[in-house]
Amino acid sequence: MKILIKGVTIIDGSSSPSYRGDILTEDGMIKEISSSIAQISGQDTELIDGNGLVAAPGFIDTHSHSDLKILTEPEVLPKVMQGITTEVLGQDGISMAPLPIIHIDSWRKNIAGLDGESDLINWEYEITENYLKMIEQVKPGINEAYLVPHGNVRMEAMGLENRQPTKEETKKMCGITRREMEAGCLGLSSGLIYTPCAYSQRSELIELCRVVAEYDGVFVVHQRSEADTILPSMEEIIEIGRKSGVKIHFSHFKVCGKDNWNKLDDMLKLLDKAREENITVSLDQYPYVAGSTMLGIILPPWVHDGGTNKLIERLKDDGLRERIKEDIKNGIPGWDNFIQFAGAEGIFITSVSSDKNKGLVGQSLKEIGERRQKDPLDGAFDLLMEENNAVGMVDFYGTEEAVIKIMKREEMNACTDGLLSGKPHPRAYGSFPRILGKYVRENGALTLEEAIYKLTYKAAKAMNIKNRGLLKEGWHADITVFNPKTVMDKGTFVDPVQYPEGIEYVVVNGEITVKNGVHTGRRSGQVIRRPLKTEV
Image 1 (cartoon, rainbow, N blue to C red):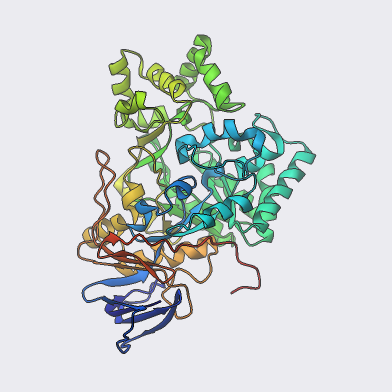
Image 2: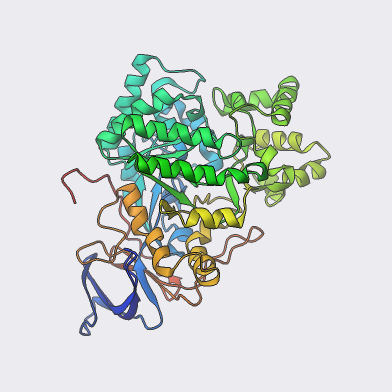
């Protein structure tokens, strides 16, 4: 199949100035880019009139939570309709694979708040290689890459207990990490606020990252704190990079809570210092002042010890409930207390797993408490019990000034971090068009060329994804064509499930997946595996 895009403004992803020209793709690759390509006829050729439009490389989402949805809804419409042609799964240290059979029940509950839940798949795949083959079998709508999740590695090696590994267990974790890197993972992820990742110490992570560094992989991390202790948290991650030699990538970089907003300049100084030491550091960001995760994160770390079943038992104990409330009220050193920096009035339910509580989606914890005539915390605890911990949430934490300051950093590339179940955060449907519409066209925080670089090639370099992220002859034909005058996200926190405006065409591996803003039904994505060291 051939595609000819005529008379389009080309922004190639390199941050070079735009220019007008034609693009020809053939057999999934970019064959020619020039000022003028002769018209091609034939049944296997599609012509796109690019007049008034911009052609860019397909957008790359470096922080995605489509891990389960890709198997049940492989079109991945929330992503491809905003121009995303590649996403990176396996985030926050807790994902689908590896998954020992003995842990399936507990682990499904543990990740349900992030990735959702389904009985439509066979969960007995055990290792990442088999999971990636499942993705290939459903023919994904966009390209999918995967990170080794630290929590899954820890679970396979030593279970879900809150303790430090023995030397033999550390060796086993390194072996599992090596096996999964050999299966094609781009690197290692960890979510140091999520169990069991939160139980690990720096020394454990350094050993695992040494393995990842052997493969030129990246350590993608939700750091221990994005609030009160964010500075020592960042120092810990940079030290891991320093001692292991691994490339560091901070997930959804931000600072939470008005008491911590003044820390941003010191955070940026730490990035500067790391660069001066030649430690490779990158970060991603979604362009909103609210975040999204699973509601269980409001509970202190000790409540999660042993997995979801133990968590539910503790919530049933009135005495332990009071202890939980005291810990939330007084705080625990080093723990990000979401109630403290967002408040019960600033945390909203986005998804549940049962019909019983669907009426609570969109309500704040304060409203749920009032509705149930209970303390908001008791209302939240009851909801977690009723839903077996499978509850998603949105929390408001930041400022527009901080979003722009981070966005302009050299290390930044874009992401969605979008949870796709229930009534999600609008970032799942609109992060990339929002940058182009709000922060380029309206605010002028970035030029269009700068923004496209951060949405494409910058992301590819951070994740070591080869031959994607640029409009370049001989590279994969992943292309997003948009209208620069109209492109914009449409979703709101009240009504988030809305596709954006202005994304006119999306080409995935040489197949037109979105045409005139409408999905064509084609699914031409590939599983992207870590490149061999001999590849360019």
